[in-house]
Image 1 (cartoon, helix red, strand yellow):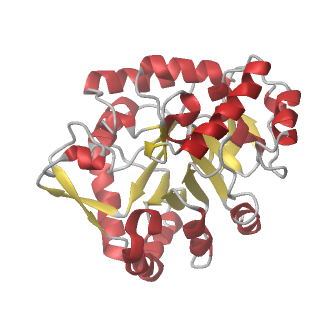
Image 2 (image 1 turned 180 degrees about the vertical axis):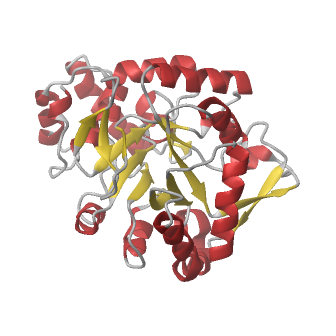
Length: 340
């Protein structure tokens, strides 16, 4: 379902089967914590204010982003305003800085380190800690962050059991009591979402990098399972860590040659239609009606303004059909003709 917000600037889509609607374009908060970018408090605040001025009311953050930095600035700017916020649990922040923040891709994080805890008590503690760092009285969407083998390797068996036996119960309890409106996962892989559908009733999965113009691995397995369960998708990382926006990174590291070659092939078609490739990357996921929102993570106000311009760029149906005819996107992936 789609509804217009009061300003008429931004369409909204329904989160799962809840009564919550969020903007189809949101703001991802990783760079606000200094993740892979040197962004100070004033620059982060300016970026959030630019998003608000553009009519965006959906924001995403996590304790992981700068070990609390992203939450602090986001809470400061959103306090007393109209917002929908997703935040994450599964990591507790403990006093004591890490020795080399860039091992975690962070510039000037707060003086904490992470302890993973997906159990009942750990989820409840993380939720309360998040509210205090934010300085806000509510979080709308609560997501279990980075559960899965992509993050944890063999240790994921233990973490997933903790989520199944306790953490999910805590999240479902917070939803039932009305403390949060929706619950889900915030992850980088399809498989753990499929596994999670077997242990509980989830409203939404924030899935980074797996359903993009470059990669549609979710189409054949995850999306049918989500449709049956009534679970929607928020697309994080629509530029696949930057490779679709002119940088050389993919999955948070240097892109391999086969990825670079596919991006070049996509760019050739975009050039034929005089379309900025990042504009196509932003709009493509929204052709799928399971996708509730796309949340890029701009690194400053200027990048946000460019993203907003890309998001409004008209793209003809022929562009998408050409990509399909060349085998550059999944033949079963719906395309966003309605955005043209």
